[in-house]
Structure formats: C-alpha cells, structure tokens
Image 1 (cartoon, rainbow, N blue to C red):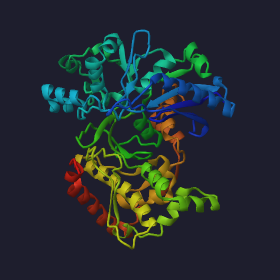
Image 2 (image 1 turned 90 degrees about the vertical axis):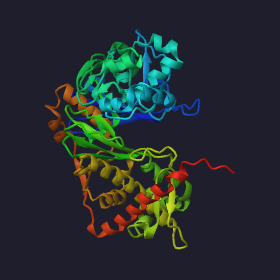
Image 3 (image 1 turned 60 degrees about the vertical axis):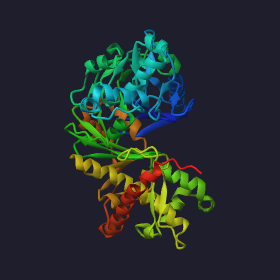
Length: 506
C-alpha cells in the first residue's frame, strides 16, 4: 500500500497520530499526552517544543505498532487547538511558551483596545468579539510585557501552522484559524493590516495565508530523523481541530452540522454565507468559500466523566462484573428514568460557560431535588443538561439565520446510543454517527488527500472516507417532556445569573 494518509491531531491535553487508507479506515493510531501549565491566575500555557516532541513520539509509536513503512505515507495533514500564539525567530526557534485557548491574561489589554479602536469595528472585520482568549490579544501582551520576545519575533504561528513548519520549514497561516486574529477579514479571507497599524503592532508578524489543503512543503531531513518518517512526504497547511472534525464527519454543505461530544460540547454549522453573532463563534471552514458558526460549551462528555468519578462506584463494580464499561452501566440505569428526569433539571456549567451565555462565573446547578430522586435521576438529568446546552446553541444560531439540518456526532459521547438518541429527541434533529471515532485526525488526513490528489475534491473525499454507521431519529413522544425541561433550563440561568456573579462573603 502506497497511499496511506497521516493525520496529526494536536489537542489540549494530548496529540494523536492516525494513519488512514483512502476509504477512511484507521490502519493505526497512537497518542501522547502533555501538561498544561498554570503559572499565574488567568494563565494557561504550553510549551510548543513539548508538542513537537510528543508528535514525534506518537508517529514513532504508530509506525512501530502496525509495522507501517514510512515509504507508504503519501501525505500528512495537521490540525490543532485554537488560539495559540507561538513566537518564532528568523531561525525558527520558539521564544517562549504559548498561551492557549483558555488563557485570559490579556483581558485588560482587550478592554483598552476595544475602547480605543471600537469593539464594533473589530467585530465587523473578524466576526468575533475581541476576547483575551484569541491570538491577537496575546501578541499585544507579548509587546507590553515580554518586549524582548516581541522584538525578536519573525512570525506568530498557531498550533497546526507550527507543526506544519516543523515538518517543512515553511511558515504559513490558513483560513480556519484566522478568526483568532482580529485583523483577519473573515468574509474575504485576507489580512486587514490597517488594524495592525492602529493597534501598534507590526504586520510582518502575519504569515502568508494559504488554503488548508495546499501542500506547503515536504518533510525535511531533520524532521524525518526526529519522527521516523522519510524526507520528501508532502505536508498540507491543515486547520483548526473543530473545522477538521467537521470535515471528518462529512459536513461540507450549508446546514450540515458537526455535533461535538468530547470533553467539551458544542456544534459547528456549515454556512455558504458569512453570518456572525456575538453569542457564537464564527470561523472559516477548511472547505473554501464555506464558514462555520460554532457553539462551544463547557458541558460535554466531561460532565459524565465527573459524575462517574464522583458518584458511581457502585456502577463501576457492577460493570466490572458484567465485563462492560461503567458508562454503559450508567446508560442502563439512566434509561429507566422517564424523559425529563421527573422534573430534575441540570445546568452543566461546571467551569463557567462559553456560548451562548459567555459567563465565566456560571455554576452547575441541579434543580428539582426531592426524596424521590435517585442516582439514576441525577445521571439522566446530567446528560439532559448537556443536550439542552446543545439545543440552546442551535436555536441561537437559527436566530442568526444559520439553520442546522442533520447533525453528525463525534467524540466519546457519540459512542453512547442512549445519549445520542437523547440529543436527537431534545433538539428535534436527526443525528448520524460516522463509523470512526477519529474524525478530527481523519479530517486532517482528508486535507492531505485532497492536496496530494488522492481525492479529486472535497465531495470525493467525503464520499470515499466518511461512512455512517447509525442514525438517530427524534422521538415525537418525548418532545413535550423535553420542551418543558428546556424552558426550566433557560429560566434557571436567567434567575440565577446575578447571584452567580455576586461575590458572597461570610
């Protein structure tokens, strides 16, 4: 076999390397974890050099585990987490750790810039609020507080462009991560360099913009030595992890939607026109002339991970005896409870909440507790709360004019038939589940396949590589119960948000 595609997925806590044949089947995969550093309040950063070493190790593990020959790899695609800001000098050296997507150290600078330039202008260009989590505010922070780093920076790279650079020696910027830059004109896919001038930063820091599927270079001899690959393998620019995941589940037309069931939850709706909403996140798709209106929530499978860890020792014991997972046992117990959890409603805001409420002080809440409630009620209510957060984002997007059709589910939560069916019932949307649980790395590999000619175009890539394993159709008999629970869900936050944001002292 000489047409293996390699996808590299650089996440927040680990990286994954996965090898695929053109039909999308996983031939081998390996992952390596790494730490997040929290040196000061509001800071969250990682060392890009550790990213690269982890990627090298993951590739070597993959090659060893399946006896794959590097000579059979015909292309490499990379995806990465959002909103990093990696300063590299002219020699390609990383000058400091990068703040990651959850870092808020530049909050004061954001307020200052928004006031001086105007938040409406910044939003009109980028389609997103000027948030400290994004890339450009971090560059402003370097300028103000790490001037020696700023002065020696040749380019600012984001996560996937950094990996692509390490493979090829070429520095680039692709559209799907552009929304991290407030000076990126998201409607036209170009730099608005006049905004750089107004902010007082140099536009020379901005890499050249290239399509996500474009081959930017080949694996260098140095990169080949570090990874165990061979020199000369083509590497494409790659994209944002969420955008690659959207491609990896086959969502490439207007209305097609990726439903994220990972540690965090959310959705990405494909649009053929550029529509923004301050309550949501707007980004370019990895598919040219397409955009993604995204909702990102704290409550995903992480909610159930927390619930299982803290409250489900009995289910763990039972599951061990049956030879199943504890999550399968939680599903079995929760399924015994009626839709709506007999009035128990959960707000899944366990670490604040992102879209559409954007409240870092939002708190998790169980409402409707009485003596009749069992652990199974709490399990089901926890899952329903995550489904309600998905519906909240979908309805917010619909009000903007971005209506989702069928959802394509991915992430660990998609392995639960029960939870996926619940999401279909709550949202009223059909949900399709692709046959692979490596959609993000697959999307990156598909970009490599398009760039190297393995696929004729995006349609051909999806037709060959994405396969639906099951479909969940909404149950109309559960609509009334879920509609009632959803209205309580919305009212709970509205009635509690002021209390959540008060500083209570004793």
